[in-house]
Image (cartoon, rainbow, N blue to C red; front, side, top):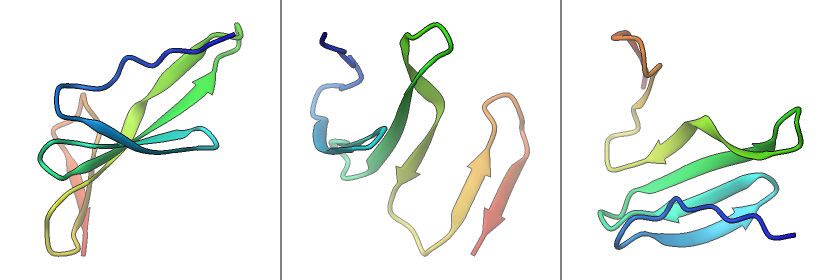
Length: 74
């Protein structure tokens, strides 16, 4: 069986795959880490949540897609 993840955009590069994670380097130099899992029906899925590592001063921000509220730590 082969599981195919069609998540790369032009200029993206996979830099690592481990456990249930895929790290993708964007053309901008940012790295996005996706989590994948097998659902209750046995189908592979990519989590709606990801981690984006980008340029900055050590600030961490989290926000739900549907919410205008952001939580920031520094």
